[in-house]
Image (cartoon, rainbow, N blue to C red; front, side, top):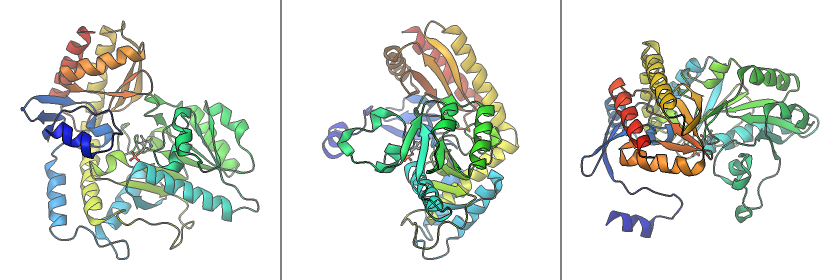
Length: 393
Ligand SMILES: *Cc1c(COP(=O)(O)O)cnc(C)c1O
């Protein structure tokens, strides 16, 4: 049985649900018995253009029947074209590096900041400040960059030095010192509970950091690539970050991390690299994903989906104020705060039984990250199932 094979041969790091999905069409998944599920998770914000996307599948097939990988020692046409496209979409004067995941993109961002701090000032600057409820990844460095104390278990110690955490943006003004090189934040904290930061506070902090010559790193691994309705949440917040990282949605399911920066002269050959990063397969796929989303935004379809989804979510919230305390989030990165953690567990279980997939974030947030291409029919059906699930609580 597959479940036993998985349990025998795959390390036990995830609390897995043993459903076996065989097929996907946009925001609908089918298991081995052909039961259909509405997917409000998109593989944790990854499958931005939906499951089984024909255009992405065609682009990948067209690419891999020719070249899948040749290494970064040679020009990679779709990598260059993707970089150009991402720069244009961002509206910022940036160049970029391609990695394979969000954590790796953040590692790259920290390396750029550290080298900047080492080479551009008379005194060494290396400290990075992040927020207490942040999430920045699972490598030894990014787990330490992550503010949540429970992640800094002694099991993996010692960690790299130079990271500290503030609960609120307003605390950062007093915790910077002359060794602080960067502040790294998510504009909408994802894993921390779908919590958007206040726009004016972010703008004020960005201005302060610029004056102090401290870099602003925006972790857009979850918020990037139209998740909040604009290409970047940084666009929505109208700020000019020094470094931005992307991952989850940019590849539509192929593994990709991106570090974009205005500091184009910090890295020189030998400073950083990746065997797989930005290879033909992933960049050709991402080029198609970004084109689809760009068309979707331009046609007005994305904004329509966001409004439609938001109205349905609001109805669900209004009808269930005995379970929920607050609506949170932006764009198609949404959540409902549940009155307690135990009830949230029950809601996620009941939703699965009604065949609609939802996520947990933080302690008590039900998180919804549907594919950005989700149809109105799928939104209607998903909320109908969610509403039925809540009746059983
Ligand atoms: C998911 C996530 C990461 C980590 O990305 P991986 O691809 O799992 O390494 C980092 N930062 C944020 C904001 C994320 O949501």
